[in-house]
Length: 323
Image (cartoon, rainbow, N blue to C red):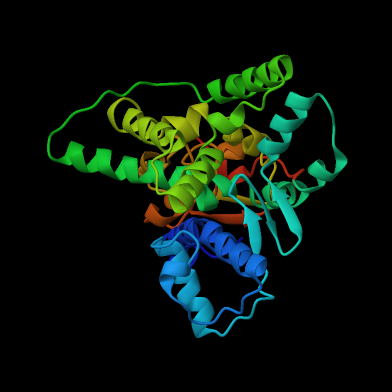
């Protein structure tokens, strides 16, 4: 078994989430600036900011200042294009598996090169489980902030609804989206999937300084989670979460529990964003390996474990629940 938790695990996860978000904020500005330079055949040397593409755009100005400071020449090539939904980094194309499902259903055709772009994310999910959700997805970060806001308001006496939605609903959403895309020939998930909506919202903000419909939809979901049902989107409604849960059902890196030494305090259950029961049941594919349960386990009985995909349920869980 692996040592309990990871060093500063929560800070590492937050740093990854924020770094990914920052990268995709800067990316459109890099592409705008590089395109302007290459089109006009300029070296990236100091010139008036009034001549910059999208003058007074703070993101483009930051890219310009960095380019000048580093003496980058006109041969500069953007490191990546695209967004969180699908991107190309140094010639390597990567797509969210749901993007591939969406495009395939809408076109009613299987396009080999598109399938290849999802291989790396699929392999990571087979090994690490639903980590995209808890460690990379900007929607998860936003809704996590919503969870903190709700908890803070509850501490000062404000009460909210607690609507219960089965986690199986997201599989119905996935099926409905696939059937709808096939029937109408339109990729539907891009309009409701947080990584896709975040890409649209970021690009619209960076390039045009506007508040997009995609951002409004994300904020509406956030409001629903704060008022009606904590973390309901990731747990019960997200079609991408459904895909990653299926792919990561038999992942190699798992959270397991040693029954001996457990005081049955239920702290792990209380902090799980997906309302799982790590105290009594192996988390399975729904778990995103966020490590929150490990962090709060004062007994040290929850930890990460490496196991082959075909390995059966660990015996550590096969015991009676103490009353």
